[in-house]
Amino acid sequence: MLEIPVLISGGGPVGLAASLLLSQHGVRSLLVERHGGTALTPKARGINARTMEVFRQCGIEDAVRAAGLAEGGTGLIVWTETLAGREIERRVPGRAIAKNMAVTPGKNCLCAQDDLEPVIRRFAEAAGPGELRFNTELTSFAQTRDSVAGILVDRTTGVETPFTARYLIAAEGAQSRVRRALGAKMIGEEKVYDSVNILFHADLRQWVKDRPAALYFVELEDLRATFLTINGRDRWGFLIHSSSKFGWKPEDFTPEFCASLIRKGIGVSDIPVTVLGVSPWEASAIVADCYRFDNVFLAGDAAHEMPPTGGFGLNTGVQDVHNLAWKLAAVLRGKANKALLDSYHDERQPLAEITTRNALANALSMGRTERQSGVLPRREFLAEQGLIFGATYASGAVIPDGTPPQALADPVTEYLPSARPGGRAPHVWLRRGNEQISTIDLIGSRFLLLAGAEGEAWRRAAQAAAPVWPPLVAHGIGATTEISDPEGKWQQAYGIDADGAVLIRPDGYVAWRSRSGIAHPEIILRAAFDRLLGRIPAMA
Image (tube, rainbow, N blue to C red; front, side, top):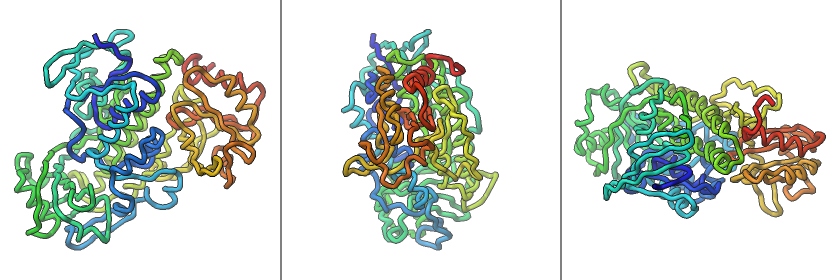
């Protein structure tokens, strides 16, 4: 009998990230993946800046960037009749403009999934105590009050291994066996439109070198498709939209037919094209109504399927497990009540519904279905700054401070940094000695208390009130402290006085804030931890 604290079913980017994060929290886990290795095709490619912040926190940001396309290789989005023909329009994505990039120490990254997964796998295997097993499948499971029991099968030998796990994370993708076994109700629209992904080799540099883009849309009356940049030279994806609208069936997409469509999209009939793979699929816009089923948690595409228009799927999934990992660690170490785990659903599920609706709206505006037949997308497309950075959590793992939420004209595209509890801790450039660092760089696998220049009482209280787990690190920000604020922006960005303090969770979200100093700060911090970790009722 194999006994493991956390079993992770699924070895894509979400499952691999879960393994790495749990190891960094000191939690032993086992990841099982039915395939023999990591992804063989590009699949998802765009990693948004918030996910790159997660990778930065995990210590893998540089490795991910090195595996992806060099910076500057995808500055545009281009619409054409054909790649070699008339250009309809080009845009700089709203996410890439200077104002939006200034809110983060990181930048978006284009790294195809078959290049990304080996990076996360390498770090996850090196981190320990997590273990990864490929060619291994979860075939059955059942829950008891305090555990999940089931069978793992080695797909090479057929050997069955019974297991018991305290918790199970289902990160198996859209076809999740666990999700179906749980009977999770999916909210939204299934099979909104069909598409075909084609991976191919062809040298397209002469048509892209002067207009480097992540996406080149082809808009013909008898072909709607997108060239997807992978390496910017000779390895590309060709995504055919709503193939059934043109009378094509999945079996029609032979290598020869695919090559002819690619040449049609290029607008050159004699260019050499080598088709490497073909994948028909259907886009859905659905979200599970529940993310937690006692000891089982849904994450990634097992929890939410969304159209790729906007590139939210992989990013939302990685951020799911970033939210979940520290909570599981706190409970498994006996330092938090199991009620803390309810906050995973409370925080992530509503955000997934909003994100999925916006991904679908992007797709509809670009004529992916019969409902609308536009060419150019709505103005929100690739400008969803508010969705990426502006999520505000409301759960038992957040202590409100009475301040009202920000009023935004468009919460999808607008983001105003705020340290109001429940929001992402804002990025501010600071200095530690001769080193420039971001507030984001201070966040790790622990709680973080940031106090103003006159907040020494909070720092002393943090040392006295620090729980055994999760660990708590405290820093003062000011001219006479270890970390300085040379531009004088930190205090205003975090909305506190010089003697105030902010408590940030391990996933980078603000848990609690005191605008100014207060009597008995040690008692206040202990009470805050008791409430955040579910050890006392939220209304206490």
